[in-house]
Structure formats: structure tokens, C-alpha cells
Image 1 (spheres, each protein chain N blue to C red):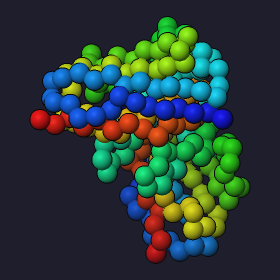
Image 2 (image 1 turned 90 degrees about the vertical axis):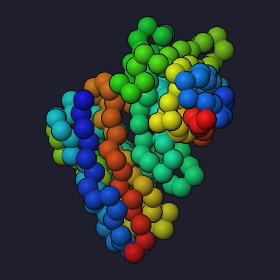
Image 3 (image 1 turned 180 degrees about the vertical axis):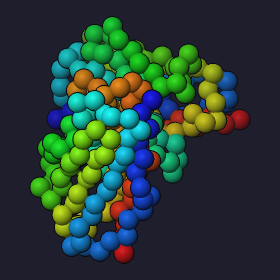
Image 4 (image 1 turned 60 degrees about the horizontal axis):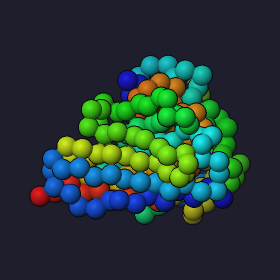
Length: 108
Length: 117
């Protein structure tokens, strides 16, 4: 099983700042099948990034994904009020599919 | 637009069974793999199970293997999760989700399952 780690658990930032979220895998994620999801309180998650760097429909270009192998990054270039949420990474290369524990981006 | 509506959640005693359903619309259901993902109260996401578009392949998390069964009825645009021998740790919101192969693309709003005596 591929274990995904997302340090830190919480990021405290101000609107307008840059957010850099990390996702580390216990072994290489094949074909970079790594996704990021955004979840707001009381809502279902939404697919944000897939294949490590492809932005899903409906998200602005201030969101970007990068990385390969075992180290992946989600960057929000300039935080807007609606971006404060929990972000999960997930690998879909190998069964069982696994999620990271999530990083909460909160308003400082 | 893609719509996924879960039903069948509720309160159930430990050791009992429950079946979740997911009604799909807005896309050609029989062309897509489908997933169940759960989230315990205040916790992170946990993938539960995946079924291929034609039901030939099914995959399960170790935590539910042998107790849960995923199935689908393409004639009814419906996905199911039969949950047996339920435990307190199965308490969660269960999400139905559309897959693109193994990628989880679209999510329903979830159904709460509470396992408690």
C-alpha cells in the first residue's frame, strides 16, 4: 500500500499569500497518477488536480500541481477567501487507492 | 450535469447490515467505473471500493474486504454498497463517486451511516 503524508496538518496564511502544500509518497506513484481534492466544510470533495499537474474544470490558474515519483506539490499562487479549505492528495496508480491525511489552509 | 444521489444511510446496530444506493444521472452510467469513498466524522477521506464499468473487476480496501460488496445495475443507473457485519469504526459519510478509470472525478453529497447500539 502506498502511504501518502501531507505535512503540515494546518497552514495559517493570509489572503493574497502563496500557499505551498506537500504530498510525499512511501513509494513511487506510477505514471504520476496523483490527484488533489479540495473540501470545504459540509461539502463533498472536488477534484482539483489530476495526473499530478492537470487542473480540473472550474478551477482558476492560480492553482497548480507539480512533482513526480514520491514528491508532489500543490501551489496556490495568491490565496483568495474562497480557497481556505482542506486539501487532500490521493494516488490512483495502485490498489488500494490511498489518500493523504489532508492539509487545512486556514486564515491567519 | 453529473448527479450522484446516495440513499440508504441511517443508524444501525453493530453486527447488522445496511445497503447503500447511489442514483446516477447526467452521463452514460454504463461507460464509467464507480467508487465508494467514506469519511468518518471530523476525519480524512478513505477509499472503500471500486467497480469497473461492466462489473468484471471489483476492488476493496483491506478494512472492508470480506464484509462489504460493491455492485451496480447499469439498466437502472444505480450503484450499491452492501455492508455486512458493521462495526463502530464504519461510522462515516459514504460518498458515491464517478471514476475515469481509477481517478475519482465527481462526487455525490454523501449518506451518513452511524453504527451504534
